[in-house]
Length: 223
Image (cartoon, rainbow, N blue to C red; front, side, top):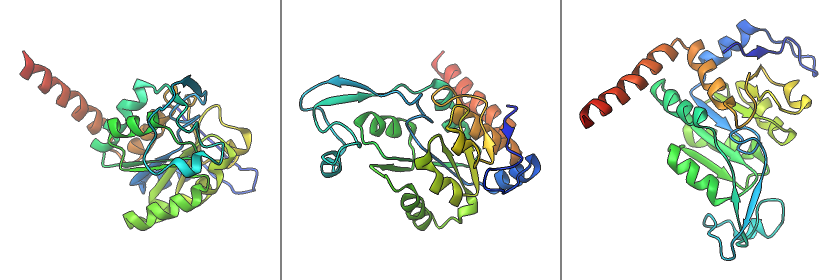
């Protein structure tokens, strides 16, 4: 968990590890990009005429760049380590949200599986989605963190209280991040972000103990 912390961003803003940890202590909600953060960024299209799409997304899909309208299934791979991160985060008191430009039933299913509270697909303007979430939650910007990998994420990263870039993010994105994860997108970067926040808040060890205890108890009941 030795995450690297930028000491100076290209914009001239200076950060240090202590300042980033202070920021992390305030975080109550972690927002994530999907492609390149929760996944490795690769998109796989499996031809399937009449494929199911999330409701209310047809108009945007016709514009191009958001997904394939009813002609294929967009397949993505998610890492199990990141799945555990959502459980640990909740045990530590965090909420979660995703903001992604693309639209796919795969993301809809993964978000439901992980019980992610705020799901924004088809959001090319991520700052607008970020502000909408602030309004819904009543949280301050400084209480929200964002994990990104590409330039479309920069407006939300600049507005939030703690900005993470994944290890293989574009350099422009790394330059404006407070923290850079050790792992690449789709390979445990979300876990890095969650553990960084919980460790700064002094709740990581308790969350891990609770996670293990909960699963041990369930296992014992099944014996």
